[in-house]
Each structure stands twice: as C-alpha cells, then as structure tokens.
Amino acid sequence: QQQHVETRELRAAPRVKTELPCLVYPGTQASGRFVKGSISDLSTGGAAIALQDDLSVFYDEVKVVFQLAVADVDLMIEARARPVRKPDETGERLMGVSFVALSQVEKLAVHAYVTAQLVRELEVPLYARA
Image: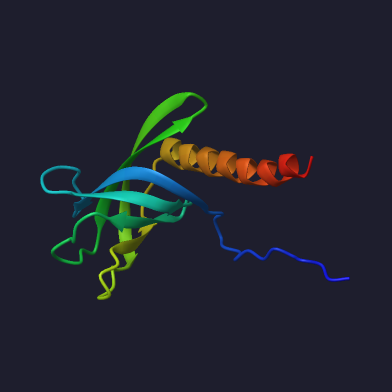
C-alpha cells in the first residue's frame, strides 16, 4: 500500500500563490516611472513578481505597491523591497524581492492575507472528499 505525502518547502515565512496586480517603482519613491506586474507568490518576507516590461536597470531597492483585501477592508501596501532574484536572460520577467521595511499594519495585513489563503488551500481538499 503506497501513501502519497505532499511535500512543501519550509521557509521562515509561509508563502501563497496569488495573482495580485502591482506597480514596481525603481528606487525608493512611489512616483515617476514604474513597471506593471503581477505578484505570483507572496509572504511577509517578500514576493515573486511577473513584470509586464523590463526594468531598464537592476536597482538595489524598489517600491512595490499593491492592494490587499483583508476582512472586507482594502489596504494599499507600499513596500520597500530589495530585489533578490532578477529576471533572467531567457526572457522570463520574474523578479524575486525581499521586503525591507513593512509597517506594522502592512505586515499584519500581508500575514492575514497569507493565512486566509493557506486556510482556503486546506479547505478545498477537505470539501472535495465529501
């Protein structure tokens, strides 16, 4: 009798798959030039962002702006972030970022969002068995 055990990579901060639209501003200010993107996975520690266009330069720090709905409240997150994985030469525009300084409210909002998504992921198989 063979058992299937799902494995997950354990990280310091749990992460979830998402499709959250975002804006990525080069540098530390949320003003001027930006690139549109979509957050494909999110945690309180950082995010993976699929960029619609290239950032012309690889910046030491970017500002990632996105909206989260938590407990029926829409919150705008303006996260300072350090790119940790730049888009590669294969044409894939996926950038990994590590959040530098989330405010307490932003950190709690991201944590609540991630937790709600994890609960939703767990609920689906439970209901599917019935």
